[in-house]
Image (cartoon, rainbow, N blue to C red; front, side):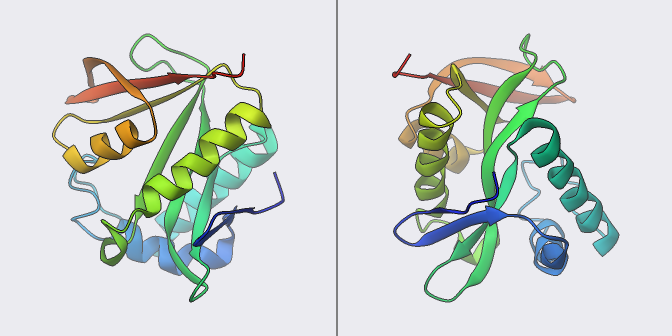
Length: 175
């Protein structure tokens, strides 16, 4: 897990506690949380706790969300990655989920798709996972378009934490 993954424009590396300030910039923006239950962070401690939780996932599952760094500027622009989900969501339990979240000024530049393709390739070729899943708020058209660009297919809609979500999946073509 330690080695960064590189794409044409991005470096995907483990999240560090020193990323807390930029993580807080990301998660304190109400626009970022529009489709995430409208609960933006209000204290930097929330970002630190989130990073610590992700670092625990690295140790426990060998995977987790990673910082997305723009090669050109060495700037933290958000996070993306494969997370192992242990609780039950949409009748699935113990599965690998792809996700992403970016600082607003970096939206609509193809970064989620670029990082997502690298993570899916990593999950299928290196981790040998059977399938990748994802879910998003039903109204989040941009996220849904990204999932479809990544090759995931819509499966169903379901209720989760009081919101209508859409479920996507992609099976490993190498198995």
